[in-house]
Length: 249
Image (cartoon, rainbow, N blue to C red; front, side):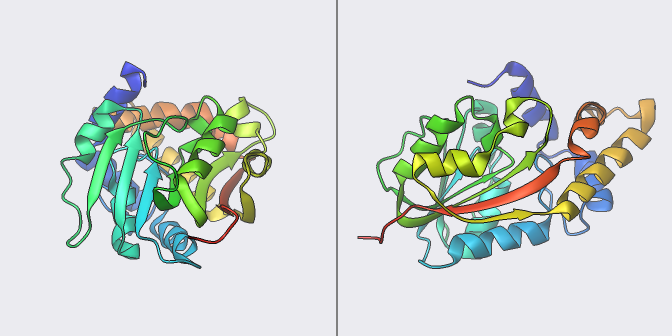
């Protein structure tokens, strides 16, 4: 279960015009309402993720683990022309995700679930993505094993997260090692300083609005920026791609 505070953050951020504006002006001029606003991968980064997910074998069904309100998963599904399953531990996030109409020709379903209990069958999906979410899994080892279980042999996993030398375990953990220990084959680990620079720029823009700001989503962004900037500014922004060994049946 998620905390009531996180559910409230979702409620505040979903559909906030002020938040959408600040993302477009200070983070990524291509940022789209409903897609951006609760994670920190610019549009070009999402396109790269889609390319990685679609390389090799065709994607029939994509799992977006930690899907939030669903916008990123739907964007990727449209790009890949595949169906989508989104899971999130926040009932508020799933409630919002179900209000978004999927792109024409795309079937999408959203359900409450967690990284360690997806509720999916063995090898049910062709690929898995977790954008800025996997590091919140309470048990990353069990989460890596669960995602391996639900993806077919040869299927790909793409994660985005932060890596720092100090701070809580969710930032300092060696995630490639965690995935490899669960049975994943690591394909690539990429550093994206331009994503981090855009995130820090966004935080500065939010904080610059000062105490006159009244939008709850932007106020949250101000507080988040003040809290995490000292931690992540000297860290790394990572994209990790891995595959389940074996060939599809």
